[in-house]
Length: 536
Image (tube, rainbow, N blue to C red; front, side):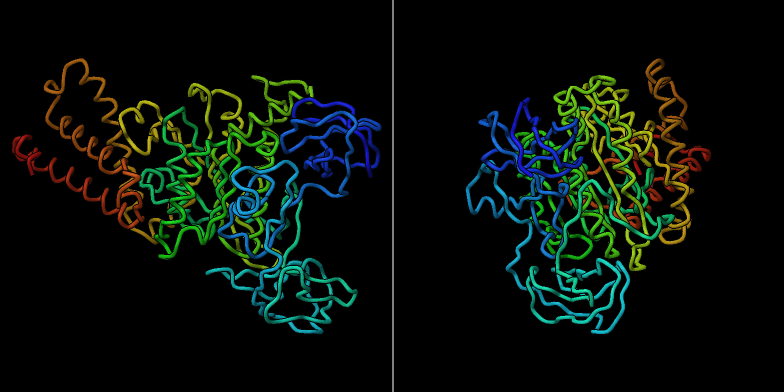
């Protein structure tokens, strides 16, 4: 299928061509730019180009591929760094330098590298779709080779194989390879979704103690400029209790991504002691890259995350920031001359976001294993306005909402999570886990902590009128203890040893504060002066 360009408008191109399907992948112009069909009208197809269209002209050829935009899935993804179209950035730099040339096409995986394949099935075995037939060792992980279809194995290999060699063969002649392709906009299949009662430990006391996440859950971090969204997401990426982390820099500044890459290459994983990068996949689609590729980047990332989830791993997807993804969607919608919704965003913004959130969850895979995909996504509302469309659309589907407060950030309080405006819908589901596995007084301590913070907030208004000297000694004691909770418990330094706090350390720290408060109250009732109590 070959057509000709009839019109160009920014990243969108109109082509006179028949035989295309919606979301088919195409190559545009003499430079072979990657594009995707987003609208069909008789013999005119509208194409969204994922690369810079500078220099493109009317009349240049367009070639259809006959399949949608896909990602390549197989051994070698871990420790990789890709752009929004899954092009390997490190190998691109080796071949052409610091800048990517237009129309560059490079396989995401190294098809010449040999992998030691260990079969778990033998010739003559009948297998179902999704059944494990063998594995290769990918770093510290067992990378499962999964049957793509039902059939009977007539030949299965073993030993060192490259990804373009046949690992196994069915009686109908179909081969099983070490890698496969999957459309990025199509969720990968599973047997059923499961109820999650396990937490995703982040190492941040404010989150794990007050607003815990569930494995397979979703959370958003909305916050204005300078509230620490990127630092918080990077801290969670470093310390979260996930097997594999997929981090998407969606429209981020290049210097922030460079800092992240540098840190991940040097840091040790607190859970395994190995290098953090060994369990990480980075998708870097910085602000200077084409806007259309930014819209595709989160789908590229979530498909790779689902792939490892299907092996029975617990995967964490972090995206920074969802607002820049929505801005790219708005820009593309505008160039398509679609009817705008609130603040110029397309009318389907909410449904597109909810469809993306739906891909998270704890599932029973086709092979019968249990895997999970958790999502933590930052949102950058303009001017810190949480009533804007992206934040509101996320609120309808996200399981946890952590509001980053500008006033706390200005006070150098990190993480700047407002403990009065934030919430987690997973709190009740995870209460039994923390009470049984960490400490039986976890729930009680949490209630006492919240109660003191709420009472201190009310007393602060009174203190502003009458002064702290006008308060009763018990109230002054409460304000002192609440200040300790805020500054020594809820506040963590992201660049010190305190940047990671396991649940056992968290509960011990808050128990010490609560016990001190109760002991001080007893001494106060016995007549000891408050000043003397506070010295101890």
